[in-house]
Amino acid sequence: MFNNLTERLNESLKKIRGQGRLTESNIQDTLREVRMALLEADVALPVVKDFIEQVKERALGQEVEKSLTPGQALIKIVHEELKNIMGKAHEKLSLACQPPAVILMAGLQGAGKTTTVAKLAKWLKDNERKSVLLVSADVYRPAAIEQLKTLAGEVKAEFFPSDISQKPVDIAKDAIDFARKKYFDVVIVDTAGRLHIDEEMMTEIKEVHAAIKPIETLFVVDSMTGQDAANTAKAFHDALPLTGVILTKTDGDARGGAALSIRHITGKPIKFLGVGEKTAALELFHPDRLASRILGMGDVLSLIEDVERKMDKDKAEKLAKKIQKGKTFNLEDYRDQLHQLKNMGGVMAMLDKLPGVATLPQHVKDKVNEKEMFQQLAMIDSMTPKERTSPDLLNPSRKNRIAKGSGTDLQDLNKMLKQFEQMQKMMKKFKNGNNLASMMRGLKGAMGKRAPTF
Image (tube, rainbow, N blue to C red; front, side, top):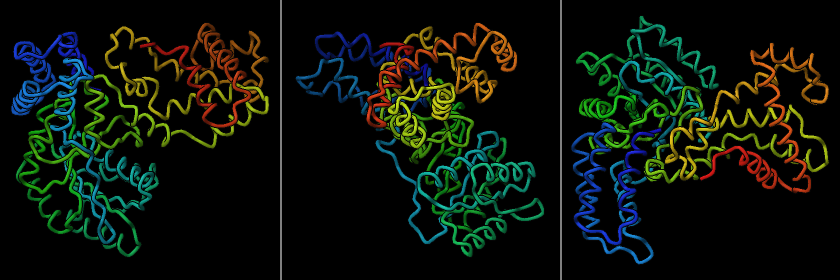
């Protein structure tokens, strides 16, 4: 996420780290490069101007703390000002009202709005323990209604049926009445998207908004459109009282212009980031944490939260007890570990949140092969249950069958089995571990053998 911006900013700030003191001259030179980095990241010009002015004013007037080098002092100022332009702190969804709390979703076609509705429903169910009703008021695209119905089933949210013969206002009101009778906590209303902003679209969504009076009106926008995302959000806000923004496709956005521009231009907070295609790929937006990631400082808090939220603790405890009893770590256990890693977004998603990884050269990052994890899962899935629990059975004939069944070759299979054996040996060393924490330290140590050092 935002790799280009991270690289450029770190390159710009690197030169001042070794300076003996901050002067107007070296600050000016550094900020000129920072300015170029932000403009290349498609950050809106007014945002860049204000940001540079604020940093310059603070840097020149700053009494550098004795414990910090001048370079560190400037980086601290840049970090704080990045937080400021993105909103200082996370702003929660407002759900404090007589149920059901109504959330209206707006946005252009192609921004991932309908998928985001399902992601938000899953997030509310998993994190806020809310019962959620989804409804589509998009009467122009029957496929959009069917898509939301399918996604509602995936995230186990209730779906309120609608069809193209109805009016959007009537659909939304009927859904809310149903939710009230059935005691749902939250209703999320998906509205029609367009390829561009037009009068008819704005009139319709204003009517829906006036009829249902939502407690949250969220604008869903594609982060990869850069400062255009901020300008589109402003156009919607001028027509509709937005309460927040959800940025989608941030996992594919190497620039970061939208994240740095939206709050400044619209005055509205970014509340969530869409970080992938899966329904679980929605993260709370924390300006301070994102500022740290942009500057290559990592985001350990989010990583810990990911592990706590997505790790199957029961399986981890079960594995810890199994190892304690002296039982063998087998390929079934290894597969469980790979699935845990997959559920947390894969290796790179985790590494990206560790300090220093973002500033590693690209050729080092390229060595992290996500495909290998899926290959290994395919190989283990091609084995019989007996082979997974007793890997010693894997003779040449069985190996050939597994390689063919998983679309891999013998070299790949032997490599996976070697890695499995290394993990197996590592697990034996933690036989005396007495809890989940000691087991996790063992897994961390095993993974550390293959992870890049920094």
